[in-house]
Length: 324
Ligand code: MTE
Image 1: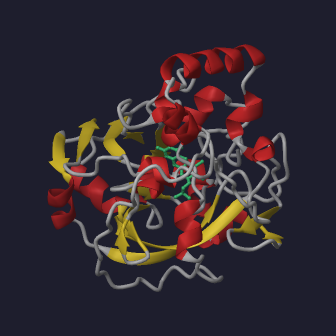
Image 2: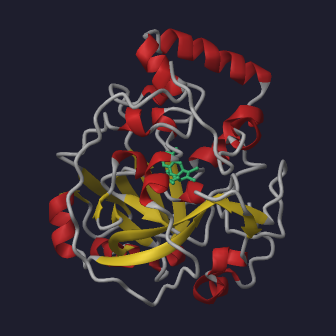
């Protein structure tokens, strides 16, 4: 039997887990029914709601990349074990303790489809992609919409480099990220009321912004499955749900996509999702955050502290809901 010791930063999930209160009663009942139908085995049930590690941790390869000191986090790096054992990865369950279940993710072979309005649509193996991308390390703040936060040394490459490689056509205005949806290894996919696969999107300008980063590693090693191996987005001025994990497709589009959380509850989770302490979530304040590993609440910064890099992109967009 699992006994999980709650620390101060373990937010009460009934308060913060997005789906738990936003779904109507009917959807919730349908959801329970679909879970029962799809996940009969006890072990899978435990995974879905956060059971003990189901499998040994996958080995992570060392990654050597020099640190880019242009991006200063201004606070201590989160202890690695905290960052890799407190996750949101709904494909593996609704709990924060999905790291055991996530070890089922099959990482090799992995390829990414570059599709849509580009000069060269292609499917490229991760290794080949990495041969063409300049790897570096950046320490970024990460702020989840649920008010927990961490500071992580990511290894990866600027998304702008991938955009350049893809050669978007002039009509392309958005970049859409689709992540893996593999029912065989991801018990969360049994919850059919969720709009799988998990998708996210940025404007092309955001994707070309120097902060937008594609991470393949953290803490000097390849990403663990639970943090979005082998390839995830890191857009630190936005709430964490924008940072899609385990990406399999990057599509250039003329049309703004309806993203995963937006299609579930657009009054709470918008397309833009830029961090702003002065704009509360409909159900909680965004003024402060709890750093993983600490009980203290600290003030949240506008644009999560990255205004100098990103604020200009949003000038004259006062009609948009930029902060939810
Ligand atoms: N990507 C996928 N595919 N599935 C998810 O459930 N959760 C998002 C984001 N990316 C999520 C995802 C949310 S809500 C957050 S806060 C971050 O991943 C969490 O990243 P972490 O677990 O590495 O801290």
